Image (cartoon, rainbow, N blue to C red):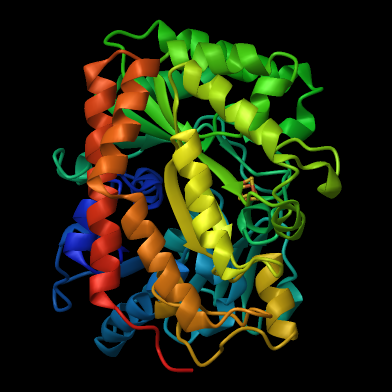
Length: 473
Ligand code: SF4
């Protein structure tokens, strides 16, 4: 069959300036496609165009919430031309029936167990309405359903087909080591989609894949210090200790980044994991800190991943101490914060930026966007707090999509814009770059830090230039 895999995007310029990390989903799906099929990967985020009239037997499209309207529009155009379209991706998990209106079939959950079944059913003319992998209330779906209740095992996965994308397109290649998350942060759909159990990829397969990467810098799309809830499981810690010993022995040595929980530094074996990760090339982590207040930690559920024993045990001094230790090991921190918890005020935006300045962390200060599939989306929807008149296009940070008890959405939007512009002033970028250089005397790392921050500065400015005003509600 001739198959097109489409990764929708909105704006070429925005794509170029944001963190240029190769997307995992389309290259993994390409790898899962048997070689007898002819594949084309269309990465719209970087400007690939779609020829709607080209000959093809199947179109697969990834649907992420902020790009759902674009994905549906593409799907509609193919359907109008009589093509078979399958939609998958994180947005589908929450809204399969909505997606089904735009597609021949819809894939819910991870692809490893369903993609080959879908290909077979397209070829035999027996396509079902829904293909579901993992635990799911399939009675809620109207139509024919293929259901594989077991989530896939991550051993023996094929290596991602990176060669379908031009080599110079992304600054960083991307790999993954685990799936699942036990943290249940209330604003995040990852635990509902991938489950609370951590599934590990075999170390030799991860290392073999890293060894084939074409770039000197790669990103690990996981929590790279392990998971606090299961730290008493020595097996979990040993996985990371062994993985980083193996990665450190690879030649040439590569730099890498990942997501990381600060709390690793506080538990048995955790500090060793962080040290070995740094030795193996880890130079930057995206840390989901979420809030500098106890109330924000409690409402977000983020206290678990920060390894506090209860929602009330959060203390900001501990967070600061953990940040300092990790930075002194030569690892730069991008701090991800969400503003908009019920007890936040407009002042919280600025206090959070002050915190980032004091700690010399890169400030990802974003207004809460309750994502479909997350517990908080369902809760706010039930409470009538979601602005349902705003389409999915507004879920990319361009608008405030929920009603806060005290703050006005326009004021939140304007202040978030100002704080981000200030947070990425040239003075602050240089100050953070020198801080990184002091902790890790490597020009490669410093240059990477500088250009990454420059890209983010540009991307945030473009975002607010594109939509300088909050939509009227
Ligand atoms: S935000 Fe929370 S639930 Fe989501 S992946 Fe990170 S730790 Fe897990």
